[in-house]
Amino acid sequence: MKSKTMVCALFLTALATPALAADSEAFKLSGFLTVVGGKVLSSTKDTPLPYAPEVECPCFTSNWSYYGIYHDRLSFKPDSRVGVQVNGKITGDLSYVIQVVSRTADTKPNVQWAYLSYQATDKLQLQIGRKRVPLYYYSEFQDVGFAIPWVSPPTELYGWEINNFNGVAARYSTSFDDYNIVGTLFRGDDTVKKSLYNKMFAVYWNFEDTDVSWKQITGGDLEINKDWWTLRAIHLQSHNNTYLRESKIRYLQDMKVYGLAFNGDFGDWFFLTELTRNDRSYPDPAYTVKAPAFLFGVGWRIGKWTPFISRSQYMERTPFEAYSRQGWDGYAAVLRYDVNSSSSVKAQLNYNRDRAPLDDFSENATVFRVSYDLVF
Amino acid sequence: MKTQLSILVVGLALSVASGARADIVVVVSVKSSVADLTKQQVSDIFLGKAMAFPDGKPAVPVDHAEGIAARDEFHAKVTGKSGAQLKAFWSKQVFSGKGTPPKELPGAADVKKLIAENPNIIGYIDKAALDGTVKVVFSP
Image (cartoon, rainbow over all chains, first blue to last red; front, side, top):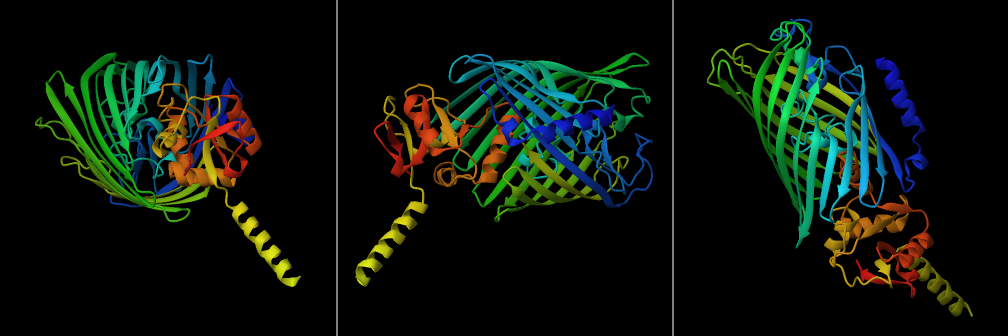
């Protein structure tokens, strides 16, 4: 099933010559492909993960949402993906976007975007359907390898149980002087059945398959851009639950997310900074886990080459002593080469340091990945 | 005779040299009511950050095809983005559902004709191709 979908998607990619990707008035087909091969070069752990004993280590989880894990043998499975998108225009003001992504780490393709858009005024757009949750700066396009400086964004901030929501959104964009301002409000929910993310914590969930829901996701973001800088702020809240499919028990939690990103682009060099916080509150026993995270990155554009380095951290804090806190320090060095204006090759080295105070999770690991990114 | 010939040769060489550098101007139809635009305003329209002219009328940008000198020059002088940066920018926009890049036309004559016939459209052409059907709104 998985390989059939991948073959279908790759066939579609091969068909999408520039002629096909060019639009007719009503319909435009486009897409992206990222192939990643990687392996763990060294690790301090050689026993299985404490909460997921089927995961042998040396190990590095690069793709938390889809249980994408590298070991000490070369693998193309954790991060490779292909996306196909259709942009359609129904009338002058009514259009739609559908994007489907197929991954080697998942058995079935996922619909990332499927929404209808109504341009109410030249500044206001109303949307209904399925969208990606705009959690952090790269969240809405983190699958598009060509558009991001890393092979994939740092796992300290990116990669959660839920990536999409079904609901409504409003987008307002305006500009004055040299400022461009875009604000969105959104509301929706989603459920992922047989969550791959939760397989990382199989022991907690009695080794059962679980369904994860983020319900009544309500939030807004604001992005301001002028000249070389871009500022983005996000806040969202939701009522989440995890449902154990065999014992039929539902565990509740409330989530609050805060994010602030400040990026600068000077042409021949650029920087990224992001501060985020993901707070989870549990009812019984009642406690809250706050998980602040940050990321700093700097890159240079030298001809067709873009070297880039970043530092990131995720550190859970809670007064509840029985909770097994997790923490990570991440360091990444990437070298990107733009083959042409539609494709690039990257080589990335990651050093991931386990900062879990109670039990070490996957301990420290050094991982090397190479990616090929294409947009069409 | 020889001096005249060498002057002619130099003259030809100069004209060839200046013709190779596309001096582009940003234009709209003479039928359009749009007057002057700033570099920021033109850049915003071509990067999908503004969908209307300052007077509120819809603005539809038209680009030249990839590989054409005028396109590279326009983007270097107005949006400040190289080919790869532009593609990365539009990849981000397109695949997060936020917009689609301007329509691309293969020939300079096609671009000028489309602009001339449609007052909503804004594009750029070689200065040498200016005629009575289009007017300049920004000169980089």
